[in-house]
Length: 412
Image: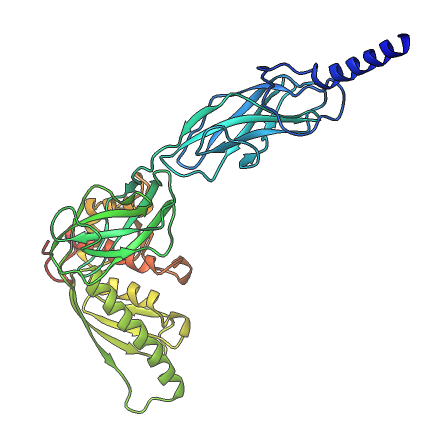
């Protein structure tokens, strides 16, 4: 009997060990991974609220309230467009952490106007623990915004505009430029000039093939994922087209050196014709001469211009400078009466100079013959081809202020 009782006891103990240890209805914490030590515990944490929400991302993170039974080996946030995201899907680590168990993570690469489900996570030897789930809806893509400076680079058939894309609306600007028409609110279906570069920032665009003495409406535009955004209308009016012509007096039998000078001067005078006919309304005929013995170049208000043998003066800078003398700068009674104590008292000139320089105190300085800035008195004064344009704009402003005796009547 004793032997049989012992057998029954052993069987009972084995059955209890196999079936008596589990109870139905118990819920274990949401974890994953294999426990590697007795009584191992996952961490406890909460997911922090979102900040800096944009069209493509946001900041979140977590607060670890209990790191569990072992050191934290990984932490961050995970997300999905479906509830209960896990680290098997999209996840990212931390960008900052402090000793109190608070960490921050940056979500990137999201889609605009989209709902996401986000949870913080912490990993230790016991497995993966997740924080509470929170929802994020990314921002919608908005219209781009602009800064559009007053248009002051205006000629008869050409103009230019200085524009800045201030904000992109939350999505990259893939194209930017200007649209224009002779009626208000032009769109990209009208005349359009696309700038070479996309994105934010300042840029300048040039308009060509305009009609003289015509009012135009212009708007900046930018294209992002939302579509095409436009600035407010900016109006401008082109000036009358110039009538600048020349006679080039040449020798009948020029030598090689003289022929080379003729080539340089031909390029310079033809370029000057383009600038004065497109950026001023002057009416003037000049006589171009190559004269051995003239040290640099000179001109009078009757249109007679002489260039010497020094090739460094046989260029567009000098040509525009000398043409200005033929129009009356430094060679007319208007000049001598308007120049007071070394400053030109000409309101239109001062206004255009301040737009060019973006300096509300700027004023043209001068002496009995020359003016500055943009008088093109030396080759060193030229920093870009825009300096040639600025000279013409100042000449046209001088004409508006009364410099017309040797350049034809000013007709707005």
